[in-house]
Image 1 (spheres, rainbow, N blue to C red):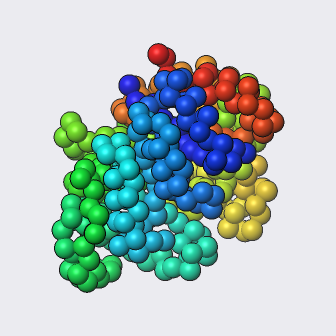
Image 2 (cartoon, one colour):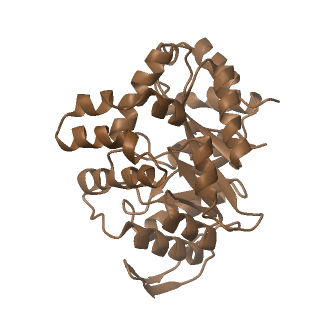
Length: 325
């Protein structure tokens, strides 16, 4: 069974992750996956893991398609695939207007088309082909990788609603799900008709604390921040949460940020954020596997124990959240 976690860990310098990657491997984790928002870039933490732990599988969940040019994205992926043959998966996604427009000075236009075209470009470029193509959302003139990887990475798409889910099933090697419950996995996968080699990854937000009030406070703030992004709002309307999240959206639109967060029901938080002691959390993560997820990827949320910075506490939590080995 595959069992992943998001890296890097908060409060641990990248140079200090050597010990933690070894700890993950010893605890039975098979995968480390990086995100890319406003912390570390997607590739550096994985490059370190490639050098330090040759048995860990590596993935990006996700690399935005708007924030790098197509050629640079291909070069970054090719370098990591060269460093970790057969072990690296490139997950790409549209990201959000805030990250693309506000933080990276790029235009967030036709996200579905940009993801589709980037996937098609990467498939050819990472195979070593000369790409000279006018795509609907960008053009590439006579680009060829100087160092194409001997083993091209598998290409996964981050997908929420039916259109992107079907694109992933039709043209990618796997899909990356996010911000959903185990029962939502069943709804999402009903849109996918893929062969046996198609992989399903899910990022699962985990707050490993027995203090339900604390976990719900963390989850309430996160849900208010994420579910007011248009793509996530439409996703949860599609999943059937339009009525229960309606008050949050109305408060947010009125500029009432605190009221928006306070209006998120406990039931929604408990469905979307795994919390409890580490063993309880691990059992809940296995519910996603039972629903059809092949690679659960834990995304740790802050707790008093994690925020303490004590190595023994982090070690205990990581082992408690690990797979049954």
